[in-house]
Structures are given as C-alpha cells and as structure tokens.
Image (tube, rainbow, N blue to C red; front, side):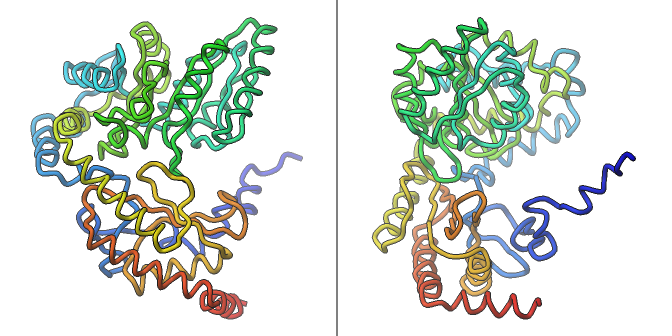
Length: 419
C-alpha cells in the first residue's frame, strides 16, 4: 500500500518546525516594526537591534532611498518583463555588471536575482559528473545545496583546517585523475556564524601544488573588508587567485540580488548555462538602479566603512575587556559564546528583549555543540557608541543571571507549568 505523502510531514515537523508552537512569532519569525535601523519596535516595545545585515547603514541612506524611489516612479516594480536572454536585458544591468567587475578587480561580472539560488546554480553550472568538489564543512546552506546537485564525487574538509584541506585535495587529485575531470574548491570569504575569514591566502598558495579552481562566497566580506571594500580577497592580498568571486546584495548593499565575477570567458559561459537566471525574470529596475547608487557610495564614501569599523572595534573590544568569549572572529560578525541549555537560552533572550530592550540572534544546538549558547550580533555603521555602551551593560547583567542559576530556575518552572 502506498503511503500518503503528507503522513511523514504531519507526524514530523523537522528539527526546527517541532518548536513552532512555542517559538513562532517571538524566537522565530519575529515581527520587527518601524524604519530599518538600530532602533525599532518589537511587540510594541522599543528595542536596540543587533540583527540586521545592513553593515554600512545604506538601507536608509537618503541618496539610496531617493534612487530607489526615482526608479520606482520611472519604471514601476515590473520592469523589465522577461528573462535577460529573451526580453529583460537593459543598459543598466550591463552598467552595474561592468562596475561590479571593476570594483572586485575581475574582468567580467553577471547579475543574479538572489544570492542563494545563484550560488546553487553556479556550482551546478561549473562542474560535471567527472569533476570533484572540495568544500568547507561549515559552508553556508546555499553551498551545501549546490553541492547536493553534483552527481560526481565531493569531499569536505575540517573548517578552515589547512592540513585537512591538503589531505582532501590529494584525494580529489587522485579521483580526478581517474575520472578525467577537474577540481572545484569552494570556501567563504567570511563565515557568517562565527565571523572568521576563510583562509584564502593559504588556499590560493596551494594552487601552485594542486590543479584546482577556487570559488569564494564573499557575502559578508564584500563592502566590509579590504582597503576599498572589495572583500576578503583584497583584505588578504590574494584577490587575483580567486577564480570565481560571488557576493550577494543582501548584506552591505542593503538590497535584493547578487553577482558573480570572473574572467570573461567564464562569465560568458555562465550567462548561457546558469539555469537560475536563464529561466527567471531579470532583476527589476528598482534593485538594479538602486544598486548602482549603493555601489557608488561604496566606492566614494570610505567614511561609511570607517564608521562601521569604529563600532565593530568598540563592541568587540568592550566584550573582550569584560571577559566575554567572542571566539576568533576577525570580521564585523560578533559572536558571544556562553554556557547553558536551550531552555536557559530562551529565557535569556526573553529577558534581553523584554527588560533590556536588546534584540539579537540566538544560535543553539544542533548548529553549535550542546551546552553552548551563541548570541550573534551584527554591528553596523548606523549604530552609535551609546548603543554599544548600553549593550555591554545588558550583557554583564544577563551573564550574572546565567551564572547564578536565575535563568535555569525560570526555565525549570516554565517546563513544569507546561507539563
């Protein structure tokens, strides 16, 4: 007898879905209201927001808002209608691609509608079943999903571990020799959860010994790292060694969309083989023209990035001076590691939001080991030193409650009440 397809879904909501009744609307799918920025409203209360990826504060920059509005008035939300290859190609799409390529020091670039689907499709287009993929075990979900489409062999290496990288490159080299294929090595410029940069300089150096091509997802590095903001490759002095450079507009650019940059022959190939773009409507003009303005500000307003790093350093140094463990982040992403259970973490976050007016992201098992709570903050250029001082004071208060067992007692009582 054939089972009802939905039986499994109805009986097993998944590792996150099983918490929906307790968490939805507060811990997950929270509704933030008000103008985007450090000060917003949550459940009717004013909160200090550390959970927006608007690194450079461009979402509400007056020039950006005007460019978006002018594009909407001139073109509406629908223009252009159709995929780029058919009827959705404009001079503004070409202009943005040319300017992006120049900014990240590559020959050519191609626009993508979304970062997630773009990365999945790039991986799919670059490899055949004879090729081997080597990638970081802590890669973002878009990379993992792209690798899942691969019909050939793939190897994961321990996160940012050079010895593990080389060991798996040796395995890949042997396998590729047998299949007659090549090797695609994938890493990130910045790992978004813990904030470490990928070891791009060391990986590029390995290309002298192993014959592979390097794809880098630099979603969090673009606009924040490097002298000009061109990303982790520029920061580490090895941008030339990145064969395929990818970033999204959803972080520093405060927009929708993404791009991929490489030598012209590679981009020409992707233009005609990237299924997520060939069969999708072109990026709308509001996002395209709006991104031109954002890129102009990235190029010409270095004080914005300077302000971002003043805030990053103030927050991270303040946390370290107070004895908090922020791991080995060397980027804007600011994780704070505390010891505690999932119920304690939920009580802590509730306390932060309701009594201290602090809103941030929380990460627990299975994303990180059991017994660890990760509070993840994204400092932006829009935050102030007063915001940071307020947050540091709140962190000292919640740490005391975690250590003295206050949160554990509240969590235990909550569980008993539920029972």
